[in-house]
Image 1 (tube, rainbow, N blue to C red):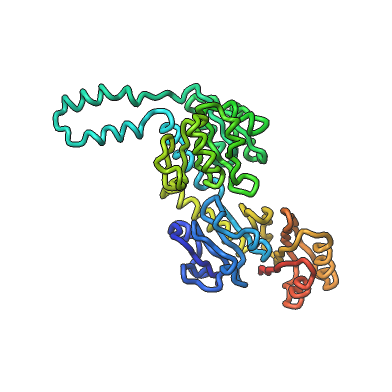
Image 2: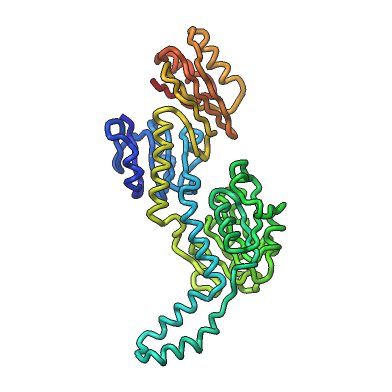
Length: 391
């Protein structure tokens, strides 16, 4: 029986993925095999000896101590792309809010509450609408920083709205490149992207290399009066630098899904309360996706969409037994494992090995049921973090 601890409210459609006969699922589970989480802040103390995996029902993993969990051999999963459409649609709203005086117009109409004379109301509306005159997005240049699951959808949306779209991604994957329209102009660096865009939309994760990347220096590359959209992560921007850029006119607007002190109510700032993935559809998609990944990992050792382990999947051939082991990415560990198997006359049916940064992961299918002594011998190899056995 696998034990799954749920933190936050996880969509029932996701929880229904876990077969009742094989899984115990709930918020009060102790010593879980896996944890499902959305926004709850996990700590090192949550990593009990039984914990093998954490599934984040969303893309960002800022609430998970990933490095500490990696050292313990705990695989951290996320769900890239599952909430992409929800975020894309909110970015579309941000684009429209940036150019049409919609919020100001709504506020003006609300101020007319109590006006009972319809003809006078119409006169006031017609006389005042010129104050909220905007511009069209068609023909404007949209710069997309980050061309992954969400960024590529935002770029395509810009093209559909007849904008000129350009993008930059320092780590563009082959898969993402295939998704991307040929009409998106690829820029060589962020300076080129920022200096040639009327509107910039951020779609990069919050990493050590990206935190505070929108700062006084990079804002200096922007066109005067540019618009910045941030529906990615609040940590990407230097709040003081944003405020100064708005005061100087370097930025005309900052539209963000991450309210921060010092910017709330400031002219030119529109903030929403972290609504990016807050749709019923996105929550269901994320929950179902992460449940499938956790089930496949716990039952077969396969890894898809991990932020700290390599992706590694191998079909079960219906015979034999499986070992899955995590180890430090140093020489001779896999050779030592294979030597132990050979010394016991255990035949290897199939095997996959892959590394990512300082961690390596191996799936080895063997003909003979592994004994406790065999597993312990493998665990005794210096650099091996954990070993799991699958019938």
